[in-house]
Image (tube, rainbow, N blue to C red; front, top):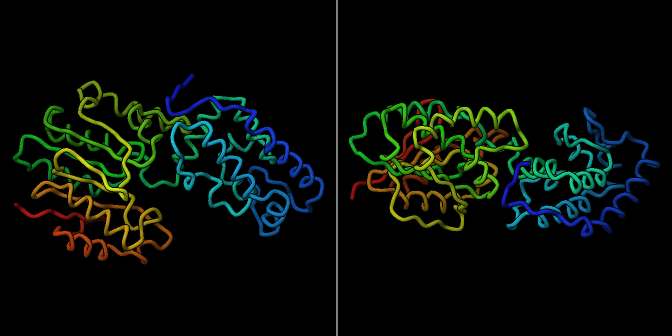
Length: 336
């Protein structure tokens, strides 16, 4: 069975009262609601949402599952990424779950199953904290940036590079960068590559290439990384938990920093936060170091926070910013 040191065995007794209350609510809901109960493939109408919230308040369900997260994780979880956080009703939350979690219209049944099945629980946790909507997932997300980097790496005269992948997520982009380094003739001993992310489960996934909630993606991840591991790149790559809004320290500067899928979107979009993170990253650069930023945000984020705004923030930190053909932005720090 898969073992992750960040996950503890839950105590079902801690949930007995909450489960009983939820079962009672669901019994009334199923016997009284004129609308269909949540089911796979059901389109959630305003009436279904209203009835679901009337009989099964999402706030009660959210509190019970947040207790589960706090009980079994060895760190304080960031619950804003979980499926319960922003759902307007249990019906909406159920509709957003993968099929393997749509076990019952009764949320109490789902919780009971999770408490009884450790493997399912682990998959559920990774689904909760590494959701597919996060933009950093997978390989090949930013091909234009990679093409720019291929040219940049091929023309470097230095014999050593220190690189940071800020907001690295589950690490595919970091390993893809190592792949590009190898393709352009760099040897592992010439490079130190770091990946930083806020979520501890992402750090573990990046270190192990394990994605329990997405076995097919996990298999492709491990197959792709294996040649790099055999060449010794794993010894030159490290991952750690870091909060870019809290300030991060590093021994020495970075010649190259990537920050993809973070700035100017749903996670960091307030002017003060953007300025704070850009200042932090600029401060981590070596003289003539490069900062690369790209994203695949949708839902109007580009209109709210256009690339020109980020370019102005770059300039405010002394970075000569330019757009990369096909999307993205790069800035170079000044010489000493």
